[in-house]
Length: 100
Image (spheres, rainbow, N blue to C red):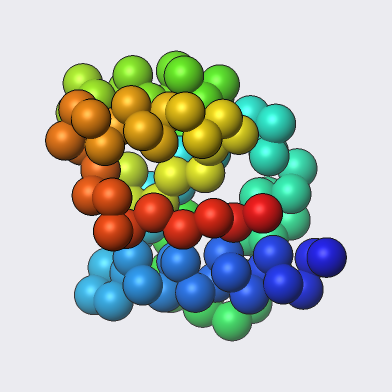
């Protein structure tokens, strides 16, 4: 399961960073270990990309983003918060991908 998950994360990061050297990644705290492991593996492939992480509960992340916190990539544990950000017009519905 790790290989497909890594592939998906890499694709999402690459899409989000076509021209960026810094990726701001907000992720549910329940994904901390997995995301950190994926970042280590990704850094081997793209050492020039700096991934800044922000781990918190999905609701906390959604509220931060709704109040203007920058995020290039977001991983929520609760998909209801995706709908919240779409309704708040802070996330384009067409940009949403299911990670797992």
